[in-house]
Image (cartoon, rainbow, N blue to C red; front, side, top):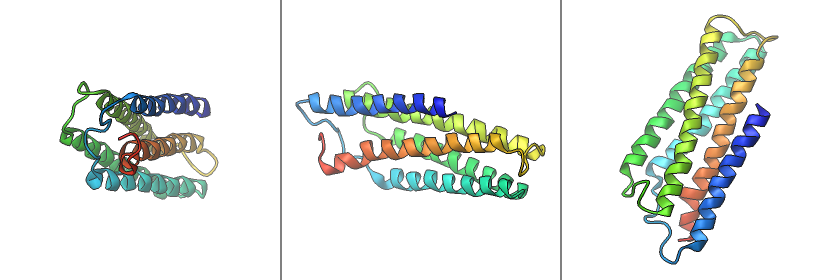
Length: 176
């Protein structure tokens, strides 16, 4: 999992680098509209909270509390699905589309790749929930839970970088 995370981190580093590189190459306004935080900020909090809930569940199974793991997985799946739905709503609210500009392409490709990782994480969490319902995990056997949680935490950390670059730096008049 650490090797997968390293390669995926490199992908996002390249995507964020391309954002900054293209932003320095433009002569006009790079950001077509100041990003709104109305949906993005609560969505960010939702995703970070989902990581805390999953951590709570993971520590539960380490203490042989399967019910806590089940509840945490279910809540995390609901929160992650909520994040995906809100992000989709935010995409539809944008006044620009993927093909409108280099900025639009960077925005939609980077947030789109993140969404693919969210969906992948949700599938992992659903598999863990199913296996947990089948009684596959206890305080001795829970490596799959820890590995799945590690991936979900990675998805959250990546979102913090994406959120900072696309939603906060334009407010600092960086590359605008």
